[in-house]
Length: 396
Image (tube, rainbow, N blue to C red):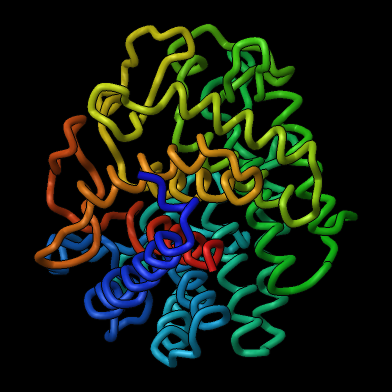
């Protein structure tokens, strides 16, 4: 069944997404996640919202702060959302930063440092949180913090020598798709909330253009019909297991970032690229036997060495819901409505927990939960509520 082609079904679907967002997902995190003793959000939660671990992901202080502030800005002026956003951002500002301005990855519940990682995604998420909170509050301090954090992200991600390589750059130099993707969506969010600001000689739109250009030039392989996760600096294939590893959900997320930009600006070349990536990576990732999106694939269909390669994680399905709905809105092609119905149905049949609310995060290939946690250092109120919020807005 296609939900997007019939006006009544579209309206029902929009209400389902909105109701799930506002009456299930966000109340779960407001009730169980917000730390009323130390500020910030706790994300390592059990099925019923009980705490599994008290360490805090700095990623999620930014991600959750952005989500709560964005709902306040765009859906309803719920004071709980603004308070929760402020709690996450206050904790982030007090405890997230090292002396060099880089953000930690994890800290204790009270905010003592635990782990620093080489990459700077915490900085990108802090940037969008500060930007959305600046818009919500009108406080210019958060505007400046957003620009500072994105500057840190850009420098560490793209200036030579700033980020320690994953493996020896002399032995096997490589570059990844993720920094370009996160660069796109961060610039898009800063543009929405702060306007057409400039950083390091480029406007946000110019940063988006640069990143899309590099994705197409280096990572999109039309001859193989694939978007690579990792390539050599010149874009060539690295013929090792890591170099051949594909993450269809990640690529589908990249596709909708590009489609969003193309739709916003009427840029046909971006729309064409986004659709090609979506088509290619859906074909590689969709499980034709059991449904759902497989986590990892190999470029040449060799066995994938990561043991969770055939599991079904919550977040690729969230990205699939957005990407397919957006592709249909742009093209009105029936195939995208059918793809959307497939990922929507599989997701809503397998991930939701009817007893305690929210979604399970990690399923076996057959769709059964591999464990009952509702959150971790990587799962919290971000991918799922973002998908519900974006799709409801798209259908409205």
